[in-house]
Image 1 (cartoon, rainbow, N blue to C red):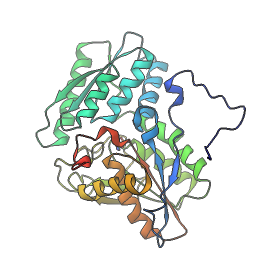
Image 2 (image 1 turned 90 degrees about the horizontal axis):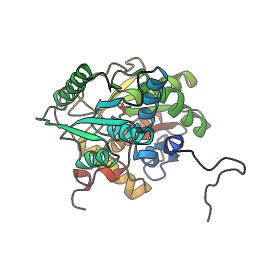
Image 3 (image 1 turned 90 degrees about the vertical axis):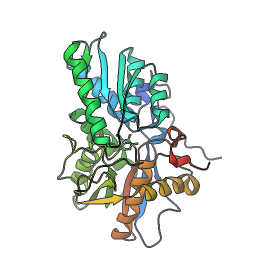
Image 4 (image 1 turned 120 degrees about the vertical axis):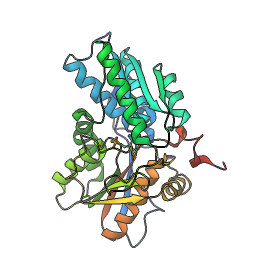
Length: 321
Ligand code: PMP
């Protein structure tokens, strides 16, 4: 048995769950990577505390707001979100003993709502009439109204919050660079708030100036490519708006992925690589494979698997299972 163990002398006990956030593994795809293409490395956020990459941003946004004095012990954290950010905030607030209220469209999976409640936060559901952009905007409006009415309300506003982007620029990206050791030639990511692509992209561009970075969009919410906005299955990305923190200079090209491509790749990740992940992970790897084919053998492409597949049982990802 060859377990990966820590060197002797490294502290093994974290003071709380928040200290254990991050340091997720970077894993080479053995069967999905193709012989005549670049190798693909994935950062598997499904094993992060809270089951997604968004626990990182939740913690950073709350921590920085506390430092600025914008959050005190009687604050109520209210956030409009299409899912994982709500779970992350509910978790972080649970550990810190803060009240949390999460506002989400009913088109996100039922598991996400249940998880938020399970971490002790309140959930407010907004009806999505087939336009995710409109539903998200309504969630944002409700949160801002609550803030106007109650001075205890703090709204992190992940779509505009620079600390969201800084999490990735200062932590996630450096973890990737440290683990990859060799140069990284390509990076791609779907866009929810744009924090991941902007933050990781900025650091990787600084470290590897020749890197090729692709923004990835669902076919039915390809707003950067000038497409229409509809409902799609790639939860967590393609929210139908161009986020304020998205660095539109950081990516070199845009890649559009269909729901079928995303779901098929997410299933392949479980069946061929043992990586249980959500649909947007399939989106990212479907794009990474196209980028890997373009860059060719001997190169390295990195992408993220933003969350675990266990919050998708009620979605088409698990149809027929
Ligand atoms: N995938 C999933 C499953 C997500 O929850 C998110 C966050 N909304 C993303 C991708 C995109 O991350 P970001 O907000 O950093 O663009």
